[in-house]
Each structure stands twice: as C-alpha cells, then as structure tokens.
Length: 333
Image (cartoon, rainbow, N blue to C red):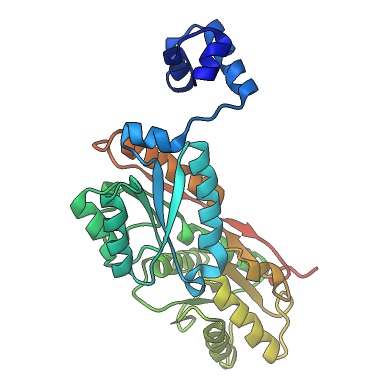
C-alpha cells in the first residue's frame, strides 16, 4: 500500500479509500490510484485484513464422503461456491464430517476459534440437527436446500424447485405419447424426495393420468433402481415411462429395460434428476433435469454477505428452476 501511495503521490489512507470506499475520492484521484494498483500488481493481504477486522472472511463447507455426493452434485456446487466466494473476496474453508453430529462438533470448533464467520449447510433433511444447532446459537448460515420441517420463511436458503422439474419431465414424456408414467423415488421420510414426488402427482393429475401402483421407493442405488423398475415392468400392464428422483435410480431403470429387451427412447422413456456425469455416459444418453448450480452458488454467497452485513434483516429465500436436458432415453436419434 505504501508503494502504491508513493507512486501516485498520495497518502496510504487515500489508497485505502480507493480499495474500500471509492465514493470518498474524486473520479480523477480514484483513476490514478487504481492505475497504480494495477501496474504494481497490488493485492490486499487477506491474513492482515482478517486480523485488523477480526473477520476471517471465510465460509465453512462440509465435504461428504464420495458415496454421498449425489453423482458429483456436491462437488460441482462447491466449485461454483468457491468461484462466487473468491469474487466476493472470501474463501471457502472445507471440513470433513461423516455424520451430522460430527459436523456440529466441527462447526462449534472452527466458529469459536474464528476460523470462519459463516457456514453453508447442504443435504438438508427432516429433523436436521445442524439447523437446530445453528439457529439456537445464532451462528450465521445459509442452507442450500430447504429446511423441510422448520419455518421456511424464518431462514435464509437457496434451493432448486424439484417438484416443478419433475412436472416438466412428466409433461415431456406425455408429449412423447406415454400415459402410464411411473415414479421411482427415495424412501420416506425425505423432504427432497417427497417434494419431487409431489411434482409427479400434480402433473399426472393435471393430465388425467392414473398413478395407482406406479410410485415405488427405495435407497439411492443403481441396483435399487434396477429392482424397482423391473418389478413394475414385469406387471401385466407395465409403465412405458419412468420419472426418477435421481440419475442413480434412472440408470438402474435403464438396466432393467435392457434386460427385458426394451430400448429406452423407443419402447420406454426414462428421465433422471441432477444431470450428473452418469447421465452423460449412460447408454443410451439419459434425459435428466439439470440444477443451475452456478446461479445457486451466486445466490448463496449473496445471501451470506447480506446476512453478515445485517444479521437482523428479514430472511430471504431463493427457489430456482431446473432445466430438462433431453437425450436418447426419451427422444431417440
């Protein structure tokens, strides 16, 4: 900062204003200082700034074990969050935890030691102990995922409208001539899974299509999707379309179709959710609902900054729509 000030012939305080309160300077002075900053390659020292402001300017984020990353969605969201945080002059502090209880212990430790000043909570669920812990202690956080059994209007969160996405998938299959459209979901209770299933039920009702016996649920594994879809395909009147709560179950449904001599896209339509790597490499390519993770991350960071700036502000919520990415599993080439 002293070098910038000397080069321009101004005080260090003027350089400080240029970087932090530019409205205090005349346009001409501001241009001169910023030109010198650019020429000298000056960057504020984040460690020194944190010491001075007593703010670590870091966001805590839990890393889940690989098998819980929903086909890479958590990793993709983390990347986008890191980009958004960097643009806001923040960093993302990642910590590992195998259970919610372990995450709570880590949150308590790194917040009390001022390692981070806020958190992002993902993979929200019913009776989520992390949300209760954070709310009771007044620790700033934004959830990526709705707080299913907490008052939603009282919390800061960003989410993707899974129900609207599944409705879109049902209408897409119906437009392709399918009338018996099954739903492969997760075991209850599941706030996220139940929300996506509600979209299937609404769409089927609006189209006047039957739902009885066409909704089945299980664990989020390819083998489960294969077993559930196979059970329905072996019925006297099998479905010709599948909307699945995840790409994982949808890939299992593709296998069940292939084992029965059915071609996805021609004989049966299959739609997944998340547009994961698996959807891209599946054979045939899997039609899937893509979450706008870059937009979700930017909104998450915006809400965090607003919450840190004004802790007493009215909580804000953002609900985004997914996009249907059509591939050969519903529309053959």
